[in-house]
Amino acid sequence: MSQPKITLAQIQEMAFEFTLDAIELHKSLTKKGHTVLADGMLKSVTQLGLLANSVDESSSSKVLFNYATKAINEVKAVHFWFRLLEKSGLLTKKWQNKFDATLDHLENLLEGRAKKEKEKSKVGF
Image 1 (cartoon, one colour):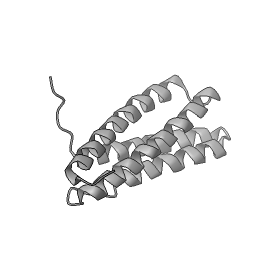
Image 2 (cartoon, one colour):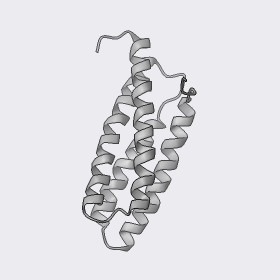
Image 3 (cartoon, one colour):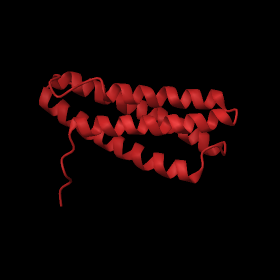
């Protein structure tokens, strides 16, 4: 069974909602005095959201590929921050489960989009 097609706009909305959730986590961590970790995590998450929302369907395949690739790299940074928060005992299971599922889904969607745009652009990478 094939997966339903997800549009760029849906990926962008998912990244936006993920960023809003991360802001709530940032508030929680900041209240507890963990501002350095909270700020680092939020910076990576907002960068991911910004990259995902900086293009539209009218962008060239090469531009879409480049932005998707940059966003994938930012996903890796966000994974790092969440792992650090988890190992430090600052990320509750509730937050961890919510973020892991969404982040993994976003990463898979971005990788699929990057592959599709790379094939369409026929640019040697």
